[in-house]
Image 1 (spheres, rainbow, N blue to C red):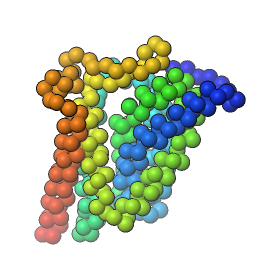
Image 2 (spheres, helix red, strand yellow):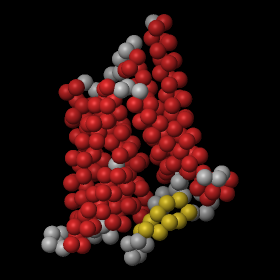
Image 3 (spheres, rainbow, N blue to C red):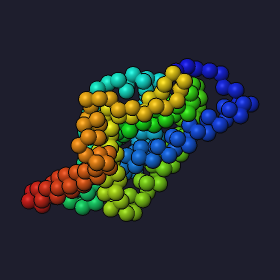
Length: 253
């Protein structure tokens, strides 16, 4: 990784910057879902600050990950731990949404709790984004930073729109939670498998022997798809079960 002085008159610079922005916008759709769901149950005066801080947190996380992406890929079981955290976040957000929609149990979200949830989720989901952007920028941190700053309004707009949709159609929360579970299952299945930058800055696919990904490849056809479906189903089943149990307790109280 390196820093450089941007050459705004260069077509190469603008082409690479465009790739970074497009990659970040496309890959950050899931981040916008988490930001919106975490901010949705806050008081109206806290929603915009949560979306702003959550979006900025996503960008800071991506910059850090882009700088140390090759080191992160060497940490064993990182994706398993991250995927489990993401499953927990999906269950937590779905439970809160169901309790809020039911009306019998009022969700008591706080700004810092929402920002904490957003930060943890974005940290898990940012590894693949970082790899793609580091490749598009050929390791140029200046270009990555510029591209991410330009992308912030897009992420904020996406999160704001999703939060508005949740206000009108609470059932969309189940779709969002299932998406988070889907991503979590895929992250877990990918532990030991991924892409990394070679010496020339190109993306190279790899699967480490002896890892969960290598075992799944041998034992389960379409392992990533199966794990993604399992993650989505798990989040929905556990989240809805917990919400209904809490509702029953509230009715007895």
